[in-house]
Amino acid sequence: MARRSSVFEDLMALSARLPWAVGLALALVSFLLFHGVSVYFSIPVTAKSVADIGTVAQRGLFGTVASLLQFVVPAAFVVGAGVSCVKRGRARVSFDRVASHGVSTVSRLSWRDFEALIGEGFRRQGYTVTGNDGRGPDGGVDLALVKGTDRFLVQCKHWRRSSVGVTVIREFYGVITARAVAGGFVVTSGSFTPDAWRFAAQCGVELIDGERLEAWISQTRTGGRAPVLAAPVAGAVRSTGTSTPACPRCGVNMVLRTARRGPSAGQPFWGCSRFPQCRGTLQEG
Image: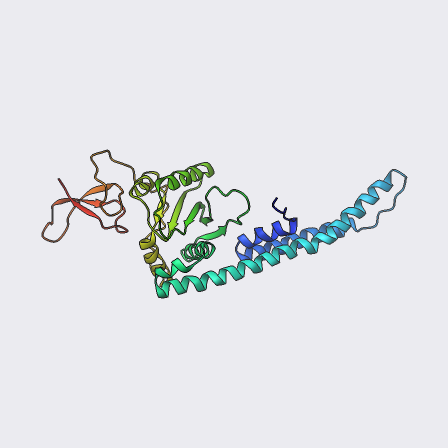
């Protein structure tokens, strides 16, 4: 039977999932709140009758509890903020190491370090990132993102040998729909099956495989424009019917384009709908 966590541990875990500055802000707010309650209920009140004795006792009890909580609750938030700060520092170092030595080093990371690496990448793209604390069901969500007024969900798959299949994407899309967020990302250090690419393109889930992950980390570290991270669901690619061919490289639907230069200038051709992330092409007809 799993050990039940204390309120202190729960508050600490909550703070550890948030940016460390938010944890410190919560510590300050909680101290001021409970300190104010403690001061209010510490004001002496004289019982004028037997009926007032209970009220006086209650005030004393509330004052005592608030006096204790004004230190305990902020302490939990401060410890959690410290944990968050340390995790963020480790994620920075890990991100820079992978960017310097190549995405092949990702295979040596634990699944938790891989999740931290992805979170750091999103932070460097301007997202506010919170993580799952691993307690209870998470619906396949490892990270939650906020940018402006939009919220996104992220699922990390540190799969080194097998490809991520369409079932994973379908289930994750169900979570995105249920939580009514703007979109979602599935990130893997490996690859996705063609069916996974096709379904993701139709429902708007953004997929980042090992190849795209390497480009993203490299460009994010150098301050360049990342090749992914659009609003996935809002920019969903819809199927145009069975006559639309699938990209030979990633399997998503293609779109008909016209060559602008080269020996085939003016001629139609099929190009991947994920261009420039994918440059798969087919001759028209």
